[in-house]
Amino acid sequence: MPAGKTVVLGLVSTRTPALENKDELKRRIEAASKYVPLENLCVSPQCGFASSHHGNNLTEDEQWRKLERVVQLAREVWN
Image (cartoon, rainbow, N blue to C red; front, side):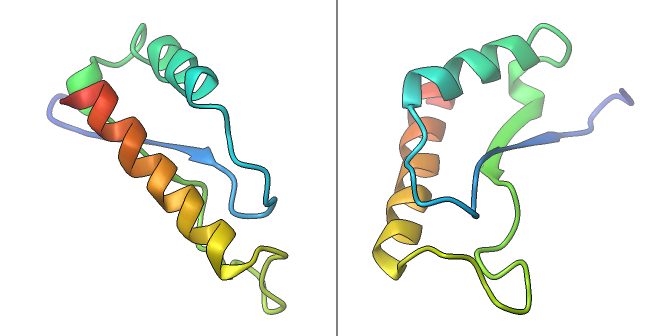
């Protein structure tokens, strides 16, 4: 990987309403950090919540919970 680049890990699904387990997400970040320094990693949803012309089968509340999970995870891993 070129120096100074950031790798975005799209670990949170925008297609299913199930909220990802935070510990599992942390394990996946830890696994990625064996190849890329932690300071060069970040986390995000996989793609937009309306990634098809029909959108995805998530309520607005489920979408907000997933975004909150991304923020919680980032604070716990990188703060």
